[in-house]
Structure formats: C-alpha cells, structure tokens
Length: 137
Image 1 (cartoon, one colour):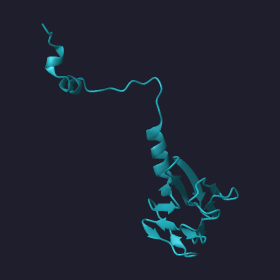
Image 2 (cartoon, rainbow, N blue to C red):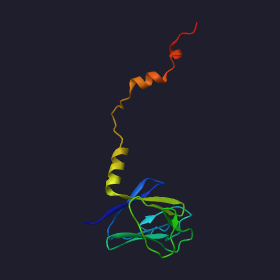
Image 3 (cartoon, rainbow, N blue to C red):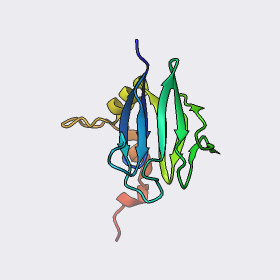
Image 4 (cartoon, rainbow, N blue to C red):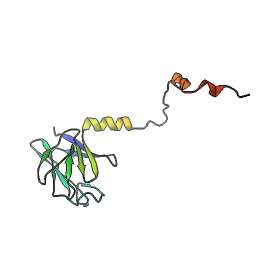
C-alpha cells in the first residue's frame, strides 16, 4: 500500500495530497504542482521527492530559503519529512499531515445545518449577575 501524506497550507487551509512516488514542486510559477501567489516564494522554490518509501524536501536554490521545523535547508540537500513537520517556504507555512489527521480535521470542522448546540443552563445562570433582574425604583 502506498504511503499518503498531505501538505497543509496554513494560509488558506488547503490540503495537497501527496502519494508515495509523486514528485511535488512548489513555487510561484504556474507549472508547479503547488503554485503559491506570494512574492517571498521563488518561481521554482522547493520540491518533494520520494526515495525508498521516504519523503524528502529540497530547496531548489530559492532566494529566501526553505525551512523545516525552524532549520534552514541548504541548497540541494534532501531533508526527510515526517508527520507534523512544519515547513516554511518564503513566508508561507505548511504542515505535513497524514490521511487520518486530515479526515479527522475535516469531520470536526464540518458544519451541521439544522442542529442546535446544547449548552449548560446552570453555566448561563451563573454568568448573569442577580442584580440584572432586580427592578429599579
């Protein structure tokens, strides 16, 4: 079974699916797999590649660099990516998620139209000051 991860783009909430063996390029140019409209991102900024079932990120000689968990990558160095790694490409933040995390996040974020939220009446009572209900003479 192929490994599946997601590149979660924090600025817009998008999840980009990455399957084992798939090369993903990230940059400002439209020919990238992930095209980012931000001046801090180079036209061809970074790439994700697979080797022996592991996912690697490399900076493609970008102007502003690529960062993983606060550490700047050196050009053309392949950094092994893992679940929950935080990636910064220019000013744009990404997080590496697994399929279970994405499904859970999407389920929890889904709205349920027509449903009423149940609240604790005692908490509401305590939040009012008893003087709020006294008549002023």
